[in-house]
Length: 327
Image (cartoon, rainbow, N blue to C red; front, side, top):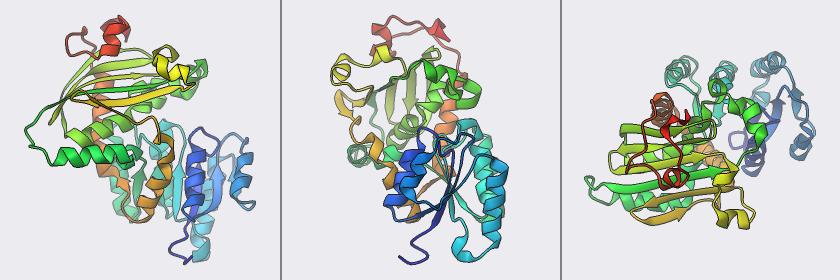
């Protein structure tokens, strides 16, 4: 490979849940992993990706190492930092990457609150580097085919949509940073950000936002988009996984039903990170502009006052007899 086609990567949050997908994507796209950092040191899987990966448990020493590489020979500098750290640290770690002379490829959500995007955009201008994020559902073949069909329809057509996403999590989830709204953005952001991005990508910008139920495990409500009326249900409660999936020993259920036609995308969901890397390395990555609408929408949902369920409520919510008082 040429120097331009093989780039040096560093990974922040390398001991986390999502990091292995990034590590595999770096390897499978022919890139080189040179450094990694995480406060936890249970990172023996790094040996699968090379024995010369520098590892740090202190962010300050990691930052110092990137700066040393930046000032050293061109062949050794870090070109991109993959950010897999907790959500509330994403914007800080993006700033670290840009100031070290690298682009950032950050897990979703890029930020929790929409105003944090403005500071990142300013830093992009100052440094000449870019911030990218992972919006992998835009690359799912079944969903790309759905979008191709939708773009050829009359723009005034309103679709009836049900979006359901259940991914079971145990008690650990609520004890960890993921269960703390100020650190994760809650279920609607931590679990739902890429789904709301998908809905906006398919059906246009949001108007009315109604929340029918919100608690630490579930969020349900109604959205009026430019070309769709959407009932949504998000859950990390194991009891919400449909029986068919539990019988097949699956812990998640993901579907979008458009005008009565269900498109389930449970299969193929976890293999899309490599496609995100391929697109980003080819200059077609998803940046701040692409991330902004879903960050703004999830903020609106999080801050909305729940209303009693009505005929616009998601069927899962009605069948479970939950009420708007769950927040």
